[in-house]
Image 1 (cartoon, rainbow, N blue to C red):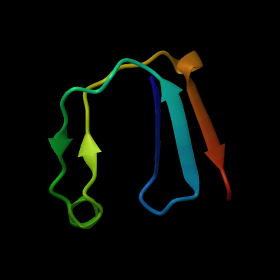
Image 2: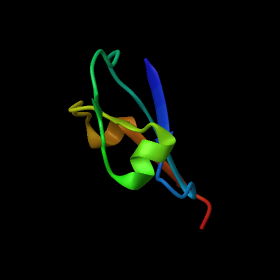
Image 3: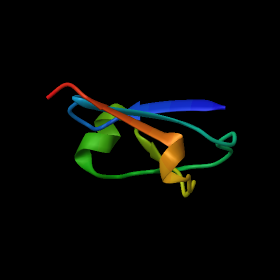
Length: 55
């Protein structure tokens, strides 16, 4: 399954192939609360991760 995300301010984007994410935790910092960010304890191999920057 393809997953994608980005850093809070947006210039760093990432995607990876991994299993379906079935659970997560809501972060309570002010930035994550505004954006509705969710964290997951998912571990992936480095070669499955693709990072793009627009900086």
